[in-house]
Length: 152
Image (cartoon, rainbow, N blue to C red; front, side, top):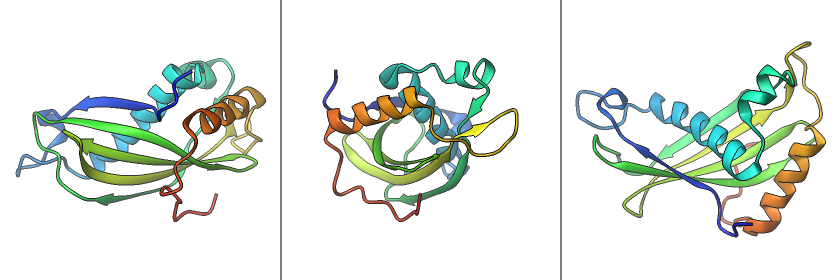
């Protein structure tokens, strides 16, 4: 089991950028969703699409924020690292750090809530997900510098 936080790598393409050649800020939020899905699939071992299609469980973002530290530009590779900040009955607060060539680029936070796609109401985090989240927390040791600004 890995002992470092999950990181995924995203090449910055023309479609991500604005006229200045830097990432247009709303595109970072799309990348946040991608890294969450990658984290579920590759680290937690829970296929994200299966949650939605077969299990009828969704994880919509109910809160998101980002501090933009340094622009990412077309041709860069943006490394996004997931930090589990805390879990609640139905919520998962995640910190996402972005870096380009090892230099901090952004510091984001996303709060997800587990809902039933049959009722569109919040539900407790399913036990298999809660167990894997706890495995992640234990394995990565958490990051005391990633205390979020959001209530979960």
